[in-house]
Image (cartoon, rainbow, N blue to C red; front, side, top):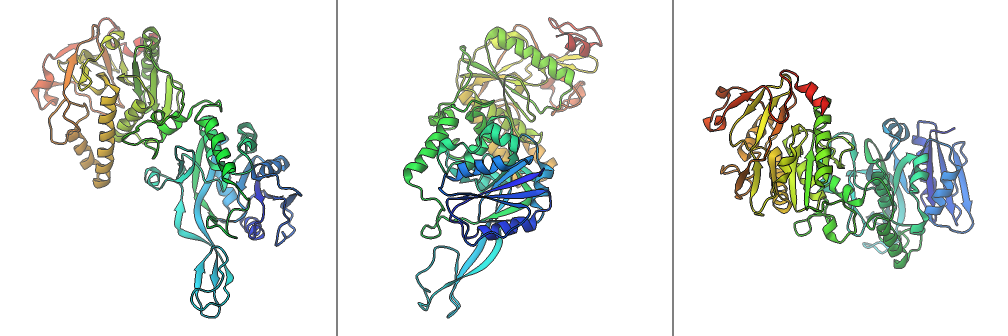
Length: 562
């Protein structure tokens, strides 16, 4: 039994023997190499090796089909598909398997591969790899191929995407958002990827309905993400890939017509854009997770759905939605009580929930983002939630606020106004001590039209990310955030995001803002902690708040009873 089978589909590949030699030389684990010769024998031939198996098809059946045939020969836990013109890092196999999860698809980071130069031995002229030249441009003599076989270390890639036609694209800007050695990527370059053999067949990642070739990276990535897995790039190891896009005798190994390429892309769109590949998530969820994605999210067409993609969504007949955001670091009793309460309200009032979290969760329509907790993350979570829903009116809901059903009875009228529910009590989770002040404006009490909120938070995220790059010091950056303010429309400081006004409303019954040890903002329980006395107007303290009515000192017990 092998741990890893490397699958190499090959046709008319002049560097196949060198690629196989490189793989066998650099593997360090219980790894085998399976080569599929699709209609052509290898030239030069492959040297015998105990860890090498060759499958020959006398008639070409296509890259996907030959890859599937190779996978049927495997009994390993993992399979890795790789092109026949690649080089790999020493110990790449062990480094990949050490980081793998059973529901992941992983690729090493990729370098451009410098395989050879054309050299004129008469005048010394050199030319980078490409189609065979007719003659030396300088002296007119014949040029010969000189092997280099080295990765181009200055050309590293670890972030990929696809455009609205599901055509593969590099994503250099996303590299700035990746942190750590094991990073997420929206899509893949189809030349190298690894997953469990079980997932290979479960997801059918080489679906021959596409035809013989094309759309491989998009297919593998979409099927992995939309089924609930992850596409990860392992920056602890690498492979180098030779690109052959110059035509002539340096083009693709398969003769492909435009119709075949269009067929593959049309089939891919049918699966993932039109929703014919049934999975846990739809394409809109994936695009929202990586928001903003070029071609899908721009100023004129800010959401995936507005591009014309037929993506499913769940909307409220009332035109309202709750956008719930959490950092997933909350006391379990508080988290469960808040979520249970919101689910009950959602069902009673027919208002759906879009949840945006930093860990996967089963709550409403969930979008999980790979971000570190903080002010920028919170703003981005809200923005992603706003991009996910189509409802006209959005209530922002925080993970540590008990909302009363009457909070959602208010409906905004003016599209250019932010509305705040000021009927809110702050309650200390440890003992249930409650505090009320007049005119308390909190993000958790904000409701407005979606387009108004989306425009604000798009600008806010952009501003904060730009300033973060300018202000690396945490203390100085947090001071700048306070200058910008948290609640849209509530101040006239020069660093405000926009000039739209706000209005108050007062729900029939109060919301409960639960104060605990993990709040992002500090709690103040004494008047002398406020520099401005206007924030203490209407100061009222209590040990319980109707109609919630917990017993004195038993607030957490009360939460478990909800």
